[in-house]
Image 1 (cartoon, rainbow, N blue to C red):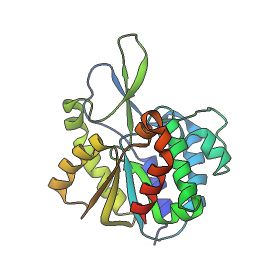
Image 2 (tube, helix red, strand yellow):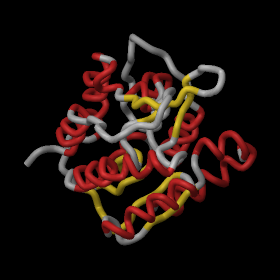
Image 3 (cartoon, helix red, strand yellow):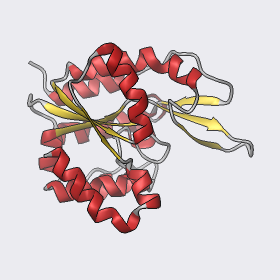
Length: 227
């Protein structure tokens, strides 16, 4: 029987988005764009997931260009990856606010070893999108920002979720980060009946950007509902 880590690594290595894209929108796939990422993510997943223990699933929106869109590890920028997980990416350096909150959560929960033994984090859409704005800059784009993009990505999302459930995911509950994310996820879950129960959290980015003074309260709420 294969380990959880092996299943995640094979999943990431074979990730490929073939759906239609709107003009000025591109896919980010760090596993194909940066040769260092597969090796780096292998260190991470073998460190925390080299077992066959079932885990509960936490889903963000889709990888951002300063977090998983670069490191290949959800809600983990290069700073957290190095300082907390002890894994270095030489080719790039990033700082992502959501990653700061998530690793504060992990610390509050009991540390990375304990947290990752209980949970596996990914995103509703496991590959991220960027779009060119009016100034010609490439910025983050969510899979649900355009209904046409959601419709194009839907098959990829469902297939990816089913593959990850097969890793050994406990489907009695799923934790969704972001209230708008949850609206679109519920549409998928109502059709596919993937999870029995959905717990929705405010997104870490929203908390860091707009509710930073209440961060400790949010951390307590996260931990209470996760446990």
